[in-house]
Image (tube, rainbow, N blue to C red; front, side, top):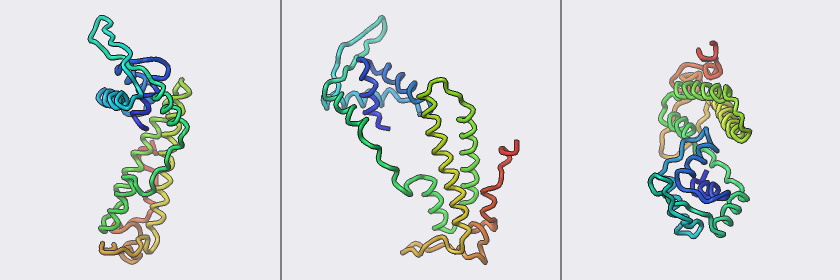
Length: 208
């Protein structure tokens, strides 16, 4: 999500200062990393320069002075345009998990321990999210989105294990050496001597 556009969205209802914007963000997205104050004020600086927000007042309220920002007509148009635009699909093969798996195979390393650890981490996180019962329906939307992504990654892990069980899952490449994935030396994942069934097996945590 774009921090700059979220800052603008937080100003639609009323002018606010940076501390209020941060609090609103963290309330809207409880599963996301808390927004840093530096991110808020950096975004406000850019938006002010672009004419999307303006200083409404400087408020003390018995404490340190805080600059209150208001949305300009240009900023409101930007929010409306941002909300109407579809989000670009994730680039295929760009995830860290995919990069690690492919890199391991390219250098004849065994990716199974990492994949098993990743599966355990995903299951643990899914249990944590499933145990949450948000009273706010919008917070539930965020939780459901996170659960669906984790579930998709788990299905990818299982599909990767099945694909790696094939005689030659790595296509011919250029200069980089191709790992030996022949069934004779690698009945399961390269160098492991184990079949992909290990990835489908229950972890100790699942048996509890």
